[in-house]
Length: 297
Image 1 (tube, rainbow, N blue to C red):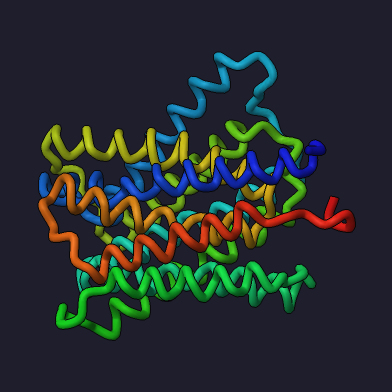
Image 2 (cartoon, rainbow, N blue to C red):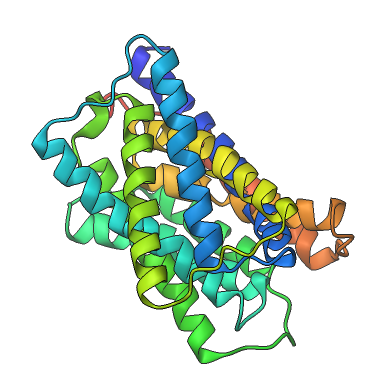
C-alpha cells in the first residue's frame, strides 16, 4: 500500500474521530442551556476554551508556532467567519425546531460541498461518492421524528448553518494552509471566532454571563472536545482525504448524537433510528474501502 493510500485512509479515520467528538456537542450544549447559557454564550465559551487549549498545546509542541504570515492571517480570518457563524445559526435553530430536524437540515452540507466543489472548483465527482451521499441523506432523514414542532425561521437557520459549514470545508481544502501545524490553525480560528461572536453578542445585547458553574464546566468540555480535538482532527481529515470524503464521513456526528441521546437522556431507539444508523455505517464502509486508481495515486 503506497503512502497516498495510507494518507487517505488515515484522513478518513481522522474525519470519523472528529465527527464522533463533534457529536458530543448536543450533550454539552443542552447541559449549558440547563444552567443558564444561551447560543451566543455557549459558542463564545467554546471558542475561548478552544483558544486557550490550543495555545497550551502549541507551547508544549516543539514544531508548532503562533506566528503566521499576512497571507495566512487573512485566510484564517476568512475561514473563521464561516466557522463562527455555523454554530450560532445551528444553536439558534434549536430554539424554534426539534434538534432532530435541525440536524437533518444542517447535514445538507455534504451535498453543498459536492455541488459547489464540482461547479466552482471542478472537483471530480465519483459514482461511489454520489451513491454514498444518497445513502447518508437517507440515513440522516431517519433521525428526524415527524410530528415535532416546525418553524420556518428555525428551518432557515439550520439550512443556512449547513451552507456556511460547507463553505468553510471547501475554503479550508483550497486555502493552502496544509503546511501550517493543525494547532496553529485551530488557535487562530478559535481566537477569531471567539472575538467575532463576542462583538456580535454584546452589540445585540445577547451576551449572558450569569451561568452556574455546571454550565461553564459544560462549555469548557465543549471547547476541549468539540474545538481543540475535533477541529484539529477534521482539518487533518480534509487535508489528507479531501473535502468531499471528509464531509461525507462527518455523518458520524448525528449518529453519535443519537447514541448519546439513547444512553444519556434515555431516548428511545426506534426501528427508524436503527435503520438510519445502519445506512450511515454502510455509506462509511463503502466510502473508506474505495479503491484508489493509479490516476488518483
